[in-house]
Length: 111
Image (cartoon, rainbow, N blue to C red; front, side):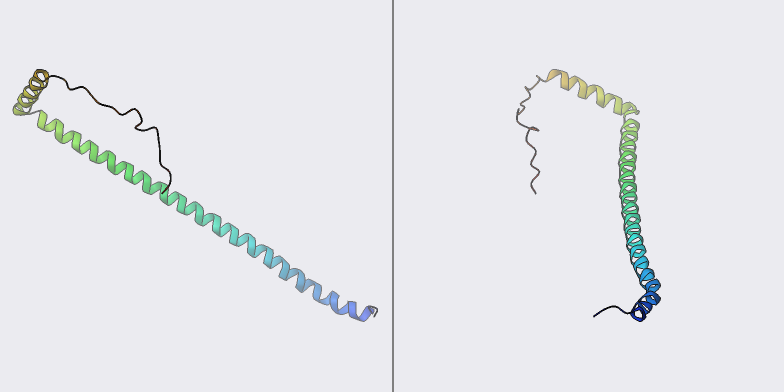
């Protein structure tokens, strides 16, 4: 059966609608990809900020501990205690340190 010109006329009138639908589908995929990428970037930035906050908190805790230790050491009793502990350490015979050679060589990544 041959194609008649009247049949093509109906197809030509619907081609613009078909092109619009195809364009929307392509734009929809691009939009979905862009949204997904922006979500991944946002999550990555959020994780990085959490890591930075944790590092800052650890640094603050260490600084507080150091400040407390130094404030205790500034008192005359603190200085005496340090001298006493130093003299006790000097009087003790040093213990030989036992180290395992294999420690730190094998890292288990299963699990």
